[in-house]
Image (cartoon, rainbow, N blue to C red; front, top):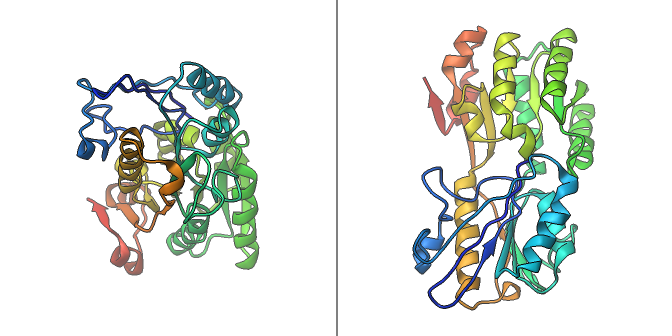
Length: 309
């Protein structure tokens, strides 16, 4: 998990926007959060964005969040459950804009989605609910597979719940599931070797910022061992992964930028309802499928939002 801190200044006064985050909240071309431009915030002019990465070390997150509070900052943005919990624990007064892969009400970020109360608001992803669809895609790709594999990062705060859910899905389908765990590069190597040793029909890569940061390694190992793999977001597929299904995160990141900018303009998080992600995308990579000797079923191709040829 790559977690970050950022600082922003405004011509309306010295303001800082700080982010303990699990993914970049800015475009690759620059650190101006999408959506903030609409409110007059331009990175490098009246807005500065800095990152301080925890690189998967979840125990570093509380310190990162506390450092931001001590500065003090104007807004804290979190784009992961761990960083969100760290921000929540560090302050109850500084506005907090989150991107949450888990229920923000259950996590204690907000009192309700429509009326957040407190100092937090943001975007709620239907991440866990999409697990069943990823299992379905894996089974459609390899209908004769005796068992599937699931790769998870055991250090992630949300990992136990994700594991419970995917195990429940597998049980409901009478599908055997091999669970492999990794939280560093060496363990990723060992986990993929175990998937190959177990001859799993397909691999489902768990939702996790750290695993995402190691996507090139995971994709390369899957290609080497000819393991069909299903991922949770587009960059996996565009980097050579076989198929991804998940939220269209570009819209979620834009909403984060919009809310952060509105707060910097004077609005309160308690008055901004939590937005629920409702746009999903299926991306398939035909080049990778050909290399693996796999043909996508027509029903999968028919639903694909993007086909990489």
